[in-house]
Length: 370
Image (cartoon, rainbow, N blue to C red; front, side):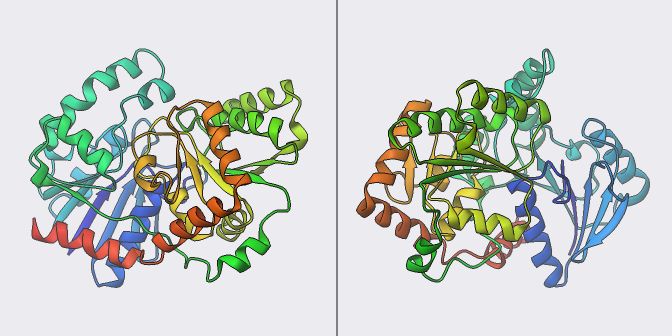
């Protein structure tokens, strides 16, 4: 098949996250199986207008704000009618492909935006987006095949009026093998209890909640350390640094910046816990990656994270989404070795059967059969 995907980012974009990882891994598998895949995404500083990555043709047009119009223009002039299938990948704003596409359209959506509008956009765009999201999704895509990654998103779509029979969940995976031995990985853990946040630092990720939770933890465990890894919006990162400085625990926090894939795995292995406190997620792929590295997660009870973390089995999902509750769960896991070992093993075992080949194959079968 010839598949065309419209997306908000590609994996080379510094703002890319788990959604882009899923897209790249699935398309790589499809190309390997003999299919042709083209990805239309926005440009970013230093990007090439066109390139091929692992067999996937990437076309970059417009920018963060203009890509939707530019993608339509480019499609109309150069791509219309040349594909068997279009995947409209929705990250807040859809590409509105049912209005102009000649080919069959399917949808890949990881999360509903809802509260994120108020964290990431300014007035009045945030109000407009919040009001229009359920309207444009239902009007344009209610009869399309919808692929998502979590039960939370599936339920949200059903509340919007989507038919259950049109919504399919694909399992998430990781692009490396789980550690072979928990005994060995535990020997690699940091000497001092270490909490890790890994991901892009932006308002909707609420990284300051992890920082505040750690601040409460280190009152009980003074030797504890906090690692913050990943790029971020400069103003937002500075806000976090200002909080740390104002509360005098700079010596306990390390900012790693953007890391390589090898460094990422190393950090996930060495940390004792990983934490996420976003306002909303599709899944929270870092949680699964951390589990594969022998590191449990403590997360807020929000869509996506309550799917990737099974409460009191593979990690802890906070009863209340407040830093004090986060700190309480940090402490509970760090001081109870028997509990930590059980949670760690459960999370690790859960990742052993995951593979992008299985995910991509299941995804493709949905597209082909519907």
